[in-house]
Length: 70
Image (tube, rainbow, N blue to C red; front, top):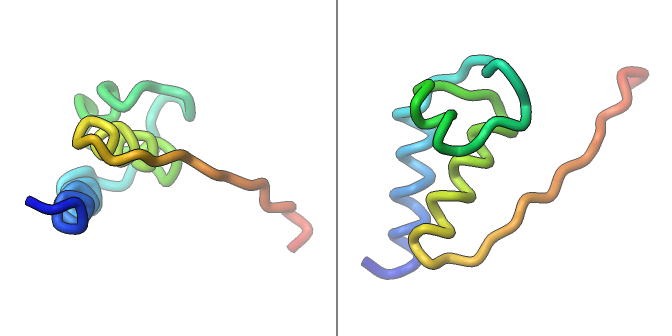
């Protein structure tokens, strides 16, 4: 598989196979998210990043804070 298809497969796995739900903490490991079978935005992002790195694809996480006054 080329890198484009590897990225797509990892993304589809996290999107379709890992249900949306709130984990016990925002800073749990990717393996814990996988074991739970669910995660929220940032924990599913951690899992996707770990899968991509495992496939040899360099990546990093960038986040920001949203002010509640919006």
